[in-house]
Length: 148
Image (cartoon, rainbow, N blue to C red):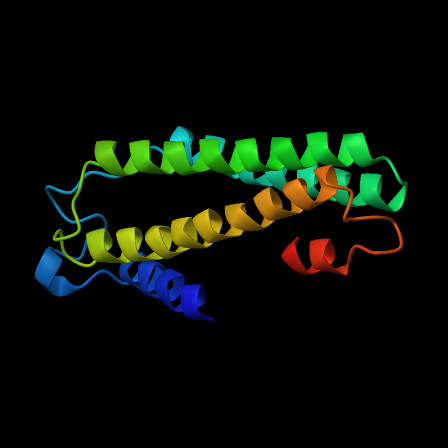
């Protein structure tokens, strides 16, 4: 619900722009990001990361320890690439946090999501270490399921 509030604010400002900003979206002088650039690439990366962690889960259930480690390495790698692209997107954004409602809403929503991804990257790292050490088996993997 927390992130939903930010996306609701974004859609409200997009669908019903205020008269004070000329009644248009985006306001004059504020550029927009190309949705088919880094945002689309990051969406594909997040979907791939979800597939990789699912691969790890199935490998654990099948007793394929090495394959599970590879899948967790792929998951962590994709999360790090996502975070890097998010940082690049921030540095290249044609607007700032002080640009009307659009800037703060964008940076708050994507910033909290990025923070969620960064914290969430720690879980597969720990699971990968535990998997490599032989702590996770097809009978004992509740920690992995909670982390995933």
